[in-house]
Length: 256
Image (cartoon, rainbow, N blue to C red):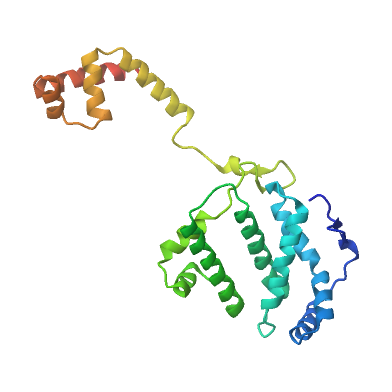
């Protein structure tokens, strides 16, 4: 982040630190309408917002904008938190803050998603927030689909469609040594150097065949036609096609 101590005019090193028992008492007062305690509680938890937005620091977004969006998530978490459940406020608030940040990043994404998919996704997100508030835990996809009376597949498709893209240079692990990035985990098992050399050799071998042999192999192995279909199109017998094909393949194996 640009600054871990001062952001949006707030010096986080001077913010108060409240224990869990203190926060529970403060939340009870806030539920009773104590606005002064509400303001103190929010200010005391701004460090939590700062710790969450650091996970989004490599997205190229302005850290001050992210901080303000994270504060909205913090306020929503406070408004929906239920003290009757034996859950720490930070445990409940972090997913809410992350959700608010992701929603902000999706809305400012350059990749366009159809309105119907976006509407479905927002309905699913709203249902997830409602279920989280009621059950004090993250709902499953099946629970969200049941809440919306929709097939699970539609919910999954809608939520996937609004996921923000991840940079290939985003670190996924960092220890004492060099960081491991997403691109290090992406492996192309199809277009390997060996496969590229094999394709090049096959291409060169095809050039050594006669035009008729090239046409027969193209129709048989690239167009998927039978020997009889090739024979009818070229105007020779199926036995001749079989012989020419066999000789051409024998030559190509020897060449490659």
